[in-house]
Length: 146
Image (cartoon, rainbow, N blue to C red):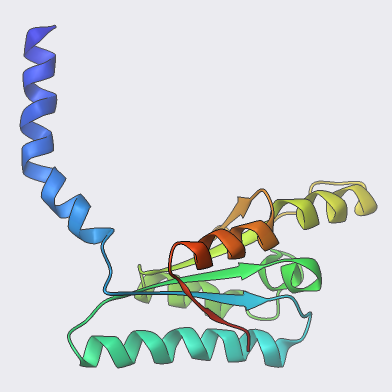
């Protein structure tokens, strides 16, 4: 048992500083999508790319959280997203970008359709998109609504 704790302690010493640094971006932004409109979805993705490029050029980091709810959840649907290939590519290029789907909206869509609505693999479900956006703003995230 003591040997196990020694291994864990040693691993934390080696990996811990990198993990802490990865979570400490210079800038934080929440991008809000609640429209089922490909133009709005693409504009939100353009905003994310532009923010990332701007801060990379300055040698700074930015954490970008794209949050969808209501009709905007279509952006993250596996079967209906008009931007899913772009989401996939951007997720590979930008590890600082995350996609969140409103759990309330997802549950209601699934109930209405009689099946669990599949989301793109890059998306995670948060309990409430509105609450999540509010909490991000309370933590100091800038808010963008394209």
